[in-house]
Amino acid sequence: MEERAWKILIVYARFGDGHYQVSKALEQQFAAHPEARFEVHLVDLFAEAHPAMDAIVRCAYAKSITWFPKTYGWSYRVTNGMKHDRPLGRWLHAFGRSKMAALLRTIEPDAVIHTFPFLATYSAMANAGIAIPTYTVITDYELHTRWIHPHTDGYFVATEELKSQIAGMGIREDRIHVTGIPIRRQFRDERRPRLEICREKGLDPDQAYVLVMIGALSEPERLVDSLLTPELSATLLLVAGRNAKLCRKLAKRFESRTQVQVIGYAENIEAYMTVASCIVTKAGAVTLTEAISMGVPVVVYKPMPGQEQGNAAYWSRRRALRMATDAASLREAVTLAIRRCEKAPARAIGHADASRVIVAEVLRGGAGRMARRFAEKSFPAGRIVPDIREAGEALGGFFEIDPPFDTRI
Image 1 (cartoon, rainbow, N blue to C red):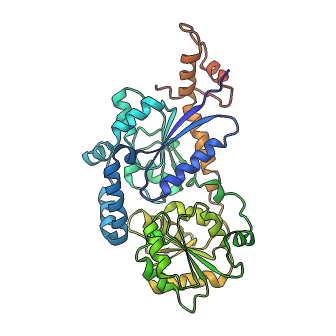
Image 2: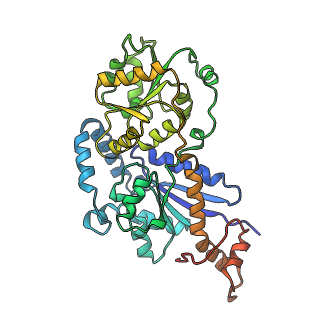
Image 3: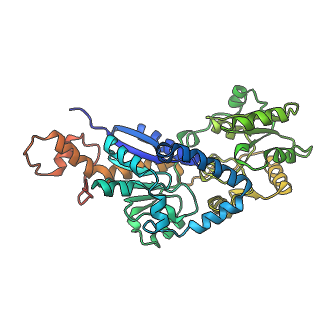
């Protein structure tokens, strides 16, 4: 009998790279499942539904966090507290509804996972008269109420504090799972030797390196100038990301400085984290999780008001990073990290198992729906299945169905 593939729809957005990387981490884990077979669809819902608007909003987002951080912080605070059934909530969650309805018809997913709070899934399902198990992976250490919808079957959060906050909003505790934030396998596996990576990248293993995620930071040239002092005996690895214009500009600006190397988008950023004595970055939750999990000393530069301040504050309280708000404090924090000349201990913070736990929960929650769909397609017409477990056994027995379960279809 042909094995039935689970169909998983993961909805993300490209406002920052973290939501996409969490989606990729989940896709990795689904692909690595030892028994079940998955057909995973990653969809940037806003970009596919409203491409022109997406380009405008992403540009405005990038400009606001760089040049108008206080304005962004104000908008974050104003919308925090919104509810899904109020005008603002209904308006925000309507974006992409038609596209989502089409995706539900064509893909027929067994589960929908949100890694960004565009929650058009619920109104699309209501209009179509269907119900599919839905899950939300909150990709910050700070809660914004935009993530919350009462019809969500399961939340996956980074901390016990977040679980308490969500439960305080009336969500049942058994729907909230503290898993940590999913990160890709390369940040969880045993690290390659530093010497091997230096040889591969053409780097001097006796040199100290500071990894600067320059593409995400404000005033990049001034920031680099502030670090190029005789007291800081290190080479700066500037990661400009997908910003090709910035990459060219920095390469030209610092082409005569041997202690500066400009890097574009680095798919294997974990290799540079292994080489680095510390990392200077914004306070994106996923980048912080990756670096701290690998034991890289972290310096957060000018965390943006809103979720970034919350992310940085969470790890600062646990002495896992330092925050710098100006050039002097940045130099001091980076110099201290280099002088220690050793990696911080990698933290066992639960993230190694986050993806695995999420996949297992999605399997458990979707088992009833999948068994019913399989039974409808596989058993002769008119035959009554005496026990839904028979459908589960026919699927190969790779999950256990333990009624009562949600059999909404």
